[in-house]
Image 1: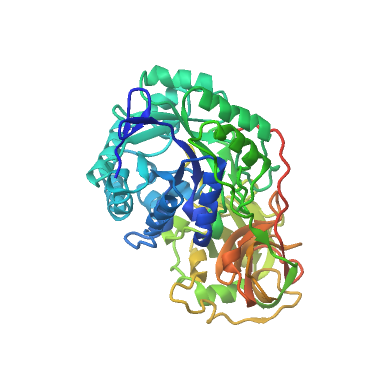
Image 2: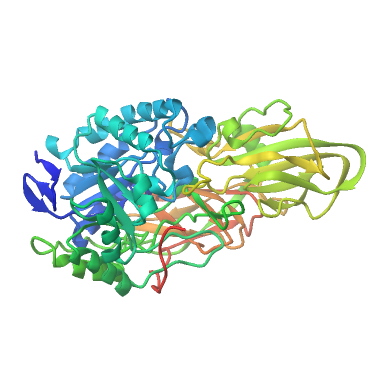
Length: 605
């Protein structure tokens, strides 16, 4: 057991000064069988601590329905085995480029703009979540012989609001649950952010990618004493679908890290290893003027241009960071573990079976709603990730008029009388070809990820306004959801047992495709990379494990396949294509090549 405290000038362990050299590694973005390897990579880089967020929505997808909350405890045990302290950031909001900033869709759907405020109902939901989660943390604090040295209250709240009553109550909930290690906040090094996000009595830390001396000077205006810490040193950045790749020069990043340490500060490298947004959990951002912001969905890879890449490989940034950190180590650094090996030989998975979306919806979907005056949103349907089919009739007879959607979030494939007529997006939500009545209209709407940062956090998904013919709302809408988690098999059964497949033919443009590939030996295989040449957009599973979203928009074209997912013999692949399938096969190989590094500017937008 040890006593970790915040002193006037340093962190202290049993009274002795200590510097935290931490790295972010999110347990939920790394296959559990690979935790030990990735944590060993952090130790070899010269770190003595690991930091992780906790996504509330992953563990409580529906009110009171908790799922594998113990994963956090198992990860903290793995950190201890690796010889690392741990920093836990349980939110309740986490940002993290994660769906809805980690808040469950049922929470934002129920409380709307009251989330992240002192609202009693919202805080009751947080209290219930903390009661389930925090025993994992409390029993692993340093005072009880565990690795947990600090816990964060909320996250970058100064970028969102000024409700100090709320922040104090979140801190109080953490204390009530038994958290007795130091609590802290983290915000950008801006006066308005630190004013809005700091709490008297809690250590304030700063998040930035460069300019440590100036950032700490600003922090000192708000916190004259106490240890200095950069809680998020942005050594890279995340990527959006349809945007250029993002990389940062390794030498520039190493210089920025060196500057932090020369200031006498502690640091948390964000990210030390980013991992992957499996199962469609990637979030989205808004860019542009406050009232006219474009949606920027985050890609499936969360490589983040980190020193340990998505495949667990050391990069040039890793080697330069190791050189910097070695000067602050108590002794020689351990050697890195062996680099994970990719799939030895490329293999093709033939996708020979297919079921149209309507058949998949019939087998796996929710019950269709009754006709309603306005279309229900995803939140009203209780859907976090997946598709919703909306059906509505155009009465007639009437002449052809423009058909569109008000408040579309985010993308819809439209059929009129069973014939595909186009794809609508938030910024272009009117069909090119007018529609006459009478007609039956189907709109298959997909969320591309909920906003995870900024004032539009928690905005609803689906059709949030209505379906318009000319300027007239069409009423009598019915909706039916196909949830992404309908493809899970928690009981070990076959979730697709009720789906009627047929041989792939030329009509198979959208729907669920199924095929397989065979591996003679998977021993020593750390990963594979999967590509779908010519396919448009959808989700992929290997042996029932959802790799996440693919999209021809790029910049990502290869999905990461964790080695532990692969098995000797026959391996099954499912592809849920929502727009237009390509040739009926998937290609698997050793994975994406190591990245090329270059200059980039990092920071919150």
